[in-house]
Length: 138
Image (cartoon, rainbow, N blue to C red; front, side, top):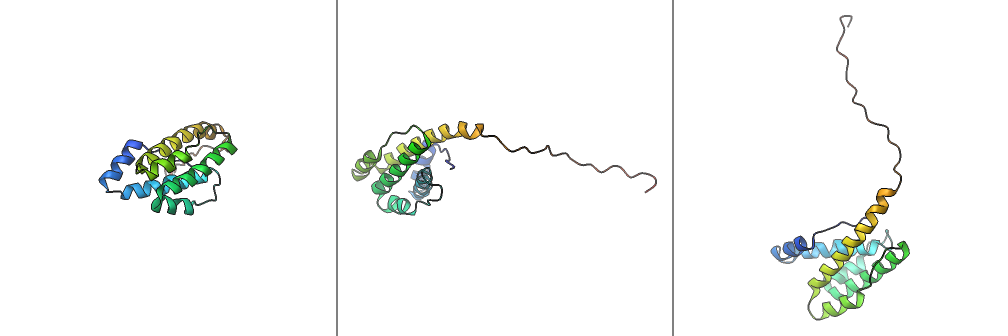
C-alpha cells in the first residue's frame, strides 16, 4: 500500500489554475489510494467513477473502505463518510477533497514509520571496479 502525501494548498491552487482538470486527477489518485488501504488489488473503479460524476457518493464509498482498511491494520482513523455526503450535496465538494487528503496524509505518516522498521534484505556494497593501467608486458 502506497499513499502519496500531497500538499492540500498546492492541490487546491492547481485545481483552480487548471479549471478543475487537476482536481479530477487529484480525485482519481486520492480515491484509488483510499480504496487500496483495505485491499491492494482493488482498483477503486466504482469509487473513482462515482467520485467524478457523483462526488459525494464516491467519497462516501471510498471513506467506508478506507475506514475498514484502517481498522484491519490497526491505524487510527475517524469515519467521515456521512460528512462527505452532506458537504457534497450542499455544494462544498472541495471540502471533501481537503478533508480526505488531510486524512490520507495522516495515514501515510502512520504507515511510514512502520515501513521503515521492516528489515531490509542484505545487499553487499557495490564496489567500483577500476581497470589497472596496462603493464609493459601487454
